[in-house]
Image (tube, rainbow, N blue to C red):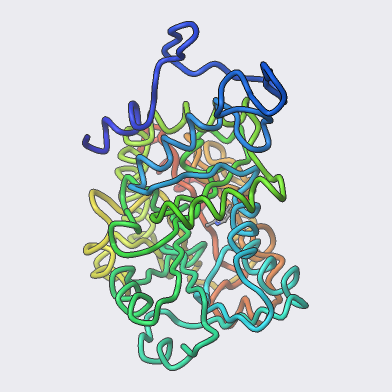
Length: 382
Ligand SMILES: *Cc1c(COP(=O)(O)O)cnc(C)c1O
């Protein structure tokens, strides 16, 4: 099955009891047993372990990312937290140095006293990265493209190294989505999503996912999910599943609008730098062309010539079509000031060190008419 068919049919079955084309929202916590320990349907006993609406979503997730198992969580961070439960004191994790603020907070603050050691490195320095590997290294964690600086990591090149050393390799594929990039096909073991973003696609649900290439590891992670309980409810599972059915259409338009917005900004006299992997001057454009198929996404970040925080703030206050709000990946265009909003949890010196300056603005370009979006940017920059 090709991708555009998988988003609609992958892992999906008509409801066996009624023939409903879409899986009903099975709003139930528990399932009947005919005799103690013998559920009427052997797959369902209690919704923390499995719920049919969530199962339909999890099978769709596995299908679109080409994994053996999909798991749906109550948020992206809950998914990442579940993955971290594979590790114990003494283990080491190597992560990319530009991460979603919440992921960084989870690694550095919640797991600070866990005894797990985190290294944050430039994943494009493959030699420096390899030098850090030792017998305690258990996981490599990469986000590509990153939030908000649109840095890329070469998934296939990193996978070659992690395979050689028998280290798990996880990729946060939130920004690219499987429409543009399939980490498991490129050699990663686990894909993580904030399904809140493009998979859900309509800014109406908080959800997360892990998709695992190996069935045994998938079952182990399912056990951890079941035992800790951050599962996605049936109503929210339904919303993400519905979002996935139009993922290919939406992301295609996000990409088209993303290119137009990036090019407009690139030529604007008040704009200093534009971070968009589709631009030829983007430092990771070659990697983008290699591993992102069919487009470069709808996330565009830029800075001001003046370098002034106030310019960024007044631009954001003037926007009419773009909405000033955290999050991304919905049909509507959003604008965000990372230093004051999404990435405020990263200490100022660290933020400056990686390049999240006070004049940096991140746009999630939606699927509205591109001309309206550009007119809006023009008036807000004037
Ligand atoms: C939003 C986001 C997350 C966290 O997901 P939640 O659903 O908000 O918990 C992780 N990674 C990236 C890249 C994100 O954008």
